[in-house]
Length: 69
Image (cartoon, rainbow, N blue to C red; front, side, top):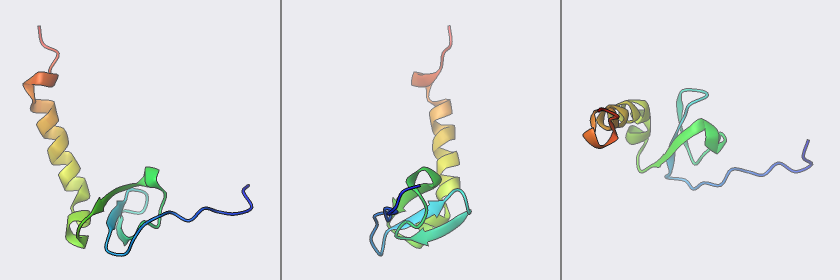
């Protein structure tokens, strides 16, 4: 166990979506591996999972990434 815990860097006005807790946070509170962001607004961060699903679908449908013969 470390004697000093390093505080996660972030600034007020930067919004993140915490995957672990399923919540929006301002200036990261959780570790980087557990969050998406930064986003410019609280609203954008609140829709992080929807945005990720949409992007994943676009990439899945992109013919440049398909392994077809």
